[in-house]
Image (cartoon, rainbow, N blue to C red):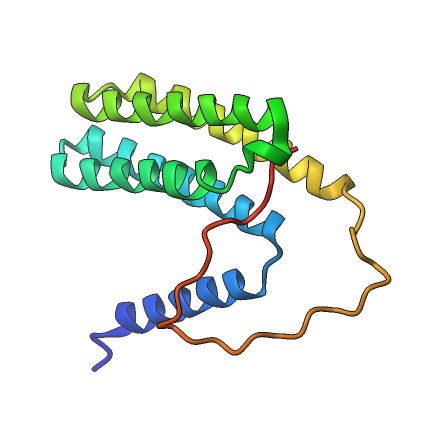
Length: 160
């Protein structure tokens, strides 16, 4: 009778995630990227242990995409200075290590990369807790109408 309950739950989860993305500030979006990469790596480790090669590869590919097209692409190397350049090099290293973990089925590499990203996420969350609002006196931004066909900019924040 309720055979599609997983589909319904997944649909609600997707709507919740999309709503969270639209309503989030740039800082929260970066935290969400860290969360996504960490979950993908955890999934990859589970699939690696179970010998599910295709699922492992897909999970590692997802983590690489989040690091490269989310975290790394959001860096503003001009405004972020040395910190942004250091993060860029670290994200490059993480992407290469994830590729190596995928090719060699090395769970120790997944653990190493997971620890690196978990530390970065913790630091990023600590920055958010202590950051002052930039324009507290300014009027809140007007909500934009959402059009799923309109391309959005990939630039979220500047590191620094």
